[in-house]
Amino acid sequence: MERFIDLSLSAIMLAGLYATMAYGLGLIYGVLRVVNLAHGGVIMAGAYLGWVLFERWGIDPYLALPLVIVASFGLGILMYRLLVRHLPRGPAGGPASLLLLFGTWLVLRNVAYLLFTGNDQSIRTSYSTASVPFLGTYVSVNRLAVLGVAVILPILLQLLLKKTYTGRAIRAVAQNADSCTLVGVDVERIYALTFGIGTALAGVAGLLSATIFSFNPGFGSGELLKSFVVVVLGGLGSILGVGLAAFILAVVEVFAILVLPSYLTSAVGFVMLVLVLVLRPGGLFGHRVLG
Amino acid sequence: MSEPLLQLDAIDVSYGDVQVLFGLSLEVREGEVVTLLGSNGAGKTTTLRAISGLRPPRAGEIRYRGRSLATIPAAARADLGISLVPEGRELWPQLTVRENLDLGAYGARARPHAARNLERVFAMFPRLAERSGQLAGSLSGGEQQMCAIGRALMSEPTLLMLDEPSLGLSPLLVDQVMNTISELHAGGMTILLVEQNLRKALQVAQRGTVIETGRVRLEGTSAELAANPEIRAAYLGI
Image (cartoon, rainbow over all chains, first blue to last red; front, side):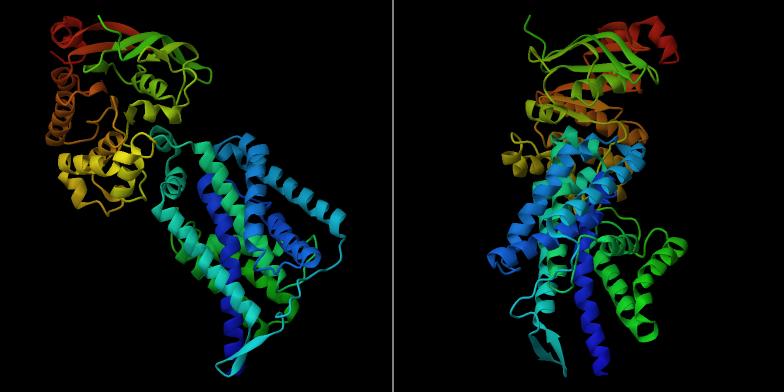
């Protein structure tokens, strides 16, 4: 029973992390129709940025959160303005965008190797091992904080998307960009902004991951693939769908530990991805785009 | 005579290698309802897209209030008072009616007046008020047309362009849309109307231009056009 509660709690916290990463990927795809293969690279960059801020300047990772958000948002805007903007629009841009963004990821990864070597790093704070009693077991304080951020950020984002003119324009561009131009929306600006928000979420996910896992410049590939699983499972746009899908993935992964050897647990997500694509290609919750 | 509100001066418009408009010229004066007529593929939609900036001309000039629009990006034209109700409505299907209308007032000029204009739109189309929380994609064709017109009105246009507003609507709804156009005209709005329903279009418009394969074929007052034997044979089936 204790083990069950333990595993459930880790699943919930993992789900928050997965949802944050996946929401960034899904938002960019939903609005720009571009699969951001550099997502994993930005996750890795967020982890290193948090690590540098902590190791060099002693800034707590949760205080570093705004800095990482701003920096990875800026990185996203830069990537959009310098690279993604020049891609052909529509389905014709598909292969080109995959190659371009995969290349961007390789560049990010190799810059990280150059700056930080390939050694594993992690952010160890004074409270990294602290835990509080809960339902007869113990919960890591840090994992609770991760979950808190992972719940608050999507709520803020949802408020932006639903309540502000800019947010509504983002959702409208995903559905019909020409109509947006007609009412005076600068669609290019919305694309850049959306790309920035998506990469900001990746950066945050990287920072949060770095407080839990160790990482090196190769970090992010598993995270990218898990984001894919969640987006495919949960569909685009609805926060609830993404959250639920992230939870399903996390639960299946965590509980697979009970029945599978540990080296196979990371394959669980991909088996799920294949199953969903074969059985329910529209995702578990249908096709709505940023509704 | 005063300067026209909108002036198209010999514009050429192409989609890739395919040229659609050939030296097309057109004038719309303030307060007028002008209708652009022609068969499918004549270039009516393309003309409106050129004016709204979605498909800028390759040659020639479009002037609005005497000023060239060549350097004005499409997204800035709503703020100048140019608004298009596109063919096929082109609403955002997964936003609510209310959200669709609100976004119509996105521009800096219209945004401060959004609340007042929303009231006007709801007064004009009470149906939209009833359905304001519903997704636009779930509306009937007629309601979608009202929503598209409402969205365009939210930007407080000086020049309202409508592309085939009666397409796919029942005769009753066609009359309603035409009445709406007459009402807007009575309120002082300048309207450029593209219509396949020539009889109805000539009833609400003062002047018309017939285009054929991207060139002006005929121009005249509505009465002249309605009496033209060629038009009667080709479009009215008389």
